[in-house]
Image 1 (cartoon, rainbow, N blue to C red):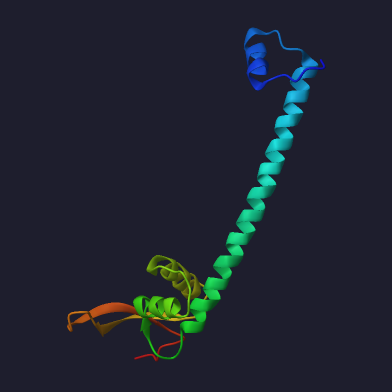
Image 2 (cartoon, rainbow, N blue to C red):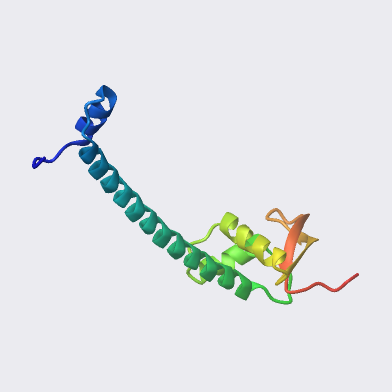
Length: 130
C-alpha cells in the first residue's frame, strides 16, 4: 500500500477481519516505537524530579542543627532561603531523614500562635537521653 492508513481503518479492519497482515505488522511496529519513546521521556522526567527531590532533602538536612525545631520552623527557614516548599514536602523529607538515621525526632512542648504551650514533634541532629 502506498497511501497512509489511519488508525481507524486499522481498527475497523481488525474488527471486520479484513486487515492485511503486512499492514497490521507495520501498525504494531509504529505503536511499539511510540511506546518506547514515551517510556524514555517518562524516565527522563522521573530522573529530573528525583534530582530535584534530592536537592530539597539536602536543603532540609542543612536546616537541622543541635537546636530542636518544628517542621513549621524548618519550612519557614527554607522559604526565607528562596525554596518553593510546603510543610507537606518538608515533612516527607524529614521522615526520610529520620528513617535513614541522619536526624532524630521527639515530642516536646512548644509555644503556639496564641501563646499557649502545645506538644509538637521537633527535629534535631540528636537528642540527649533523659
